[in-house]
Image (cartoon, rainbow, N blue to C red; front, side, top):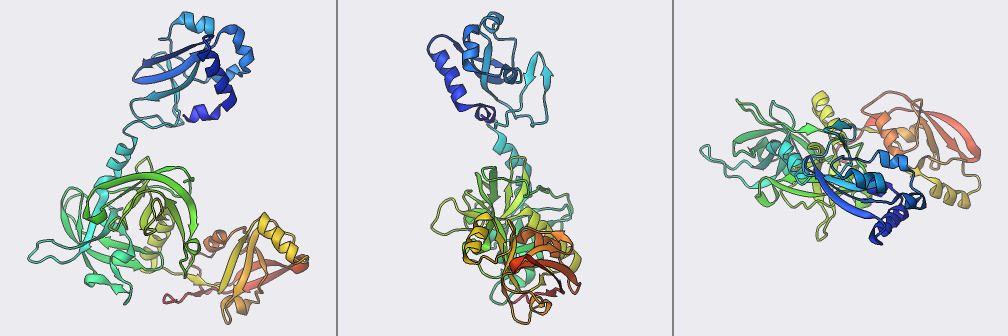
Length: 427
């Protein structure tokens, strides 16, 4: 269907109209488990269709269709579907006289194959309430085995007491694998602000693991699967699409540290938290974390790229190190800039950048000389256009002087030096 959508809509309409009027021949044929649907256009009509026929040369052609039909009418394939798995976009060639296509469409088992790849690594996590070696805990979430040594990725709110900010159940949870095996897990790390935690189990036999993908290449409309144990129903798979790739915590009314989420319409429920969000290749691209109550199709996941950074902090420092500047920042775009220029003719000439909205008194930014209304255009020698770029450059650097170039009213450039401090985890 992707190939069909790439063609001009009116063009396709005219082709089908010609066939429907009896001047053309529509046909369906199968070859090597592939079903193709197309129309054949008489030679005199070809020019009226205004089709650049070089495009048709790239459309799969199979000699199994009558040669007389092809020569007299000139076949044009609309689309084809394969009963098996669809080859990747890089694969093409000729096999058995028929050009192999890569239309980007799905087979009937595409989701099943993706779920099968990650399913064995998805676990059910419950509170440690067993007695005499018998596991009988209450289900509190899901998790994903990401390392053969038994490292499990899950959400912090499933294993952390938010009120006391201490590890729940004395750091012990029960972990049940898809194959029914049960283990006692130890909570090694938990970060409340990102809602990410690491649980460790020990096994004498090899453990299945999930492949980590990348969330940076996701686009709105991409298919994804949510795998987990909602309401203690283990091995549950739901499907949906990515609704937004950068839903900010402020959009959801969540205060505190800035966070970004993947929004999907996958059905998730209590118990799904901590389970993987998976692409159609069976790779983990996010961790399901919450949904909007009393709303359908509004689910959120932490992007796996952000999760990977948090795990790196855990391994390096045993905690998440967050530098603090004391700035509230806003990303600029053409519309915002135009509105600000209407209000103040002295507003700097910029198209993009990071606007400083507010500065915390006594903060590193205040001591460095930042002013509300400054526009950050360079951070540590690198051009920046959005808040994410600033945070990525900042990383986990503490106590290190950083040069920042800001543009002020009347296009005046000022270079400031700011020294980040570690944020207060209780703020």
